[in-house]
Length: 302
Image (tube, rainbow, N blue to C red):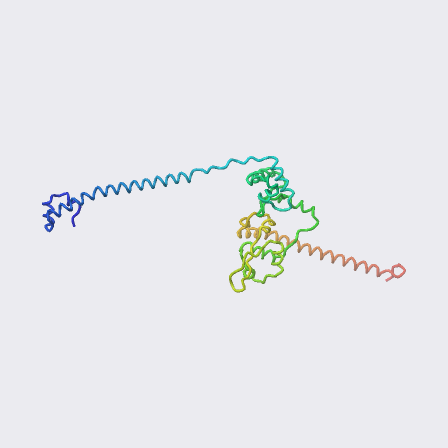
């Protein structure tokens, strides 16, 4: 094989090293190698230019991506519109979305949604330091008393809040955390059968709904939670549900309280039993004292 360094020698030197080659062959090879050299250099230059161009494009793209996005200027809030939106939210007996608020206005006077949203944001800021807050939930916005004041407000209502069984709450929790699930999935997790009354109660309260049916024999219903469920528990999305680690921490924190409650119940039962025994003893003493008197009320002589 003839190397490029060999071609720099004279034809005689090459013939001495490679006697099988003729002088014309050597000249032809030299000319070919000479023609290829500028071509390679040009190709290298083109490749280099392309690489630099691509790098420049990437740099430009990076500059564009790192540039801060143009933020929209804040929408001016009309005081009249703000008052109307606040009144609608205050008077509504349900959560309201900006689109639902917009539909309250006459068709030709409906404000833009961004103006309504700006009014809601300003109203929410006005209530930051007040006992009432404008809360955003899954179904929209509503006014509600802040959580810390709920014990006082509950005194206004004679009707006590409903108490739900442990089985119902466990079923609801499984649906919330594992949805979509079938009734069989719930029973497998709980280890016991699920009462039809529990499912019916959750459906009637609109806390769960049938999302679809599982493509297996029998096509059982797949259950999931609703926006009403989120609204009732003061949530705007399922992501606000406590994690399993947080629930475990709450259980650990509740252990001392549970033991304290059990101890108080035992002490109360013991005190009740002692009071009953003391009352019974007093009754016995009274009967004995009465038996010492004769029918005329005079004490008998022993």
